[in-house]
Length: 259
Image (spheres, rainbow, N blue to C red):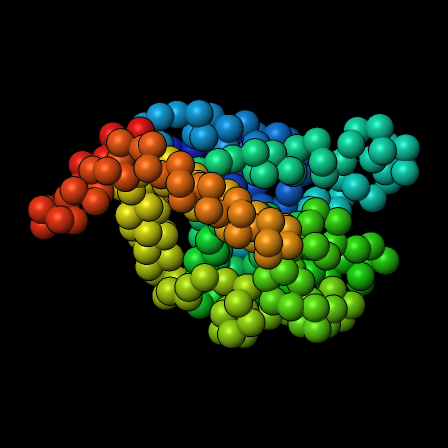
């Protein structure tokens, strides 16, 4: 792929790696980038040779937010007719495989919301998270007001959304916004290693776990428990589950066929 493209893609074994590639704009998220990101996610999701996906940016910025220069003159009807955000930013919700965000530097506004839409966030020590849209008389409209309270609770989410203040990696970790913190120099290696570990597990099991956790995130406990139980029962129809249990009993490494 041309290095002028808004994203770069490559594969590392069973891991698909997507790099946001607008370094001069600190990876500000415009329609071209989000269209390309959504397409890459769907391609990796459909590829039977891929078991997990990583999204990353640059050392300075995962993504510094939506591209304000592109948005400044839009009208209500412009965004309504084009189905802004929903049309392409939400493509990530259709991805059934695990998606990991490797975040260094700024994850501001839409960049923070993109990370929140991923399943696991690995933060470099330099990572900084914020939803500063209030400073522009806007609001976090790519899922920020909805996903952030679910991740860190109402009180902290209200603070961040209403004040626009910045969380460093350590505070983001304390509040449960990120999954792990690693040194900047190890960010990609550590995230790819984790993704490779996940991709080595049975893909149907990974997908069932992801769907079940998301159900807990989005529904009442009783509904989530019922859904989880059916997913557990369905594991007994999986060749991989029986292989995993047999391998455990035989004290050997399982050989998963992703069936």
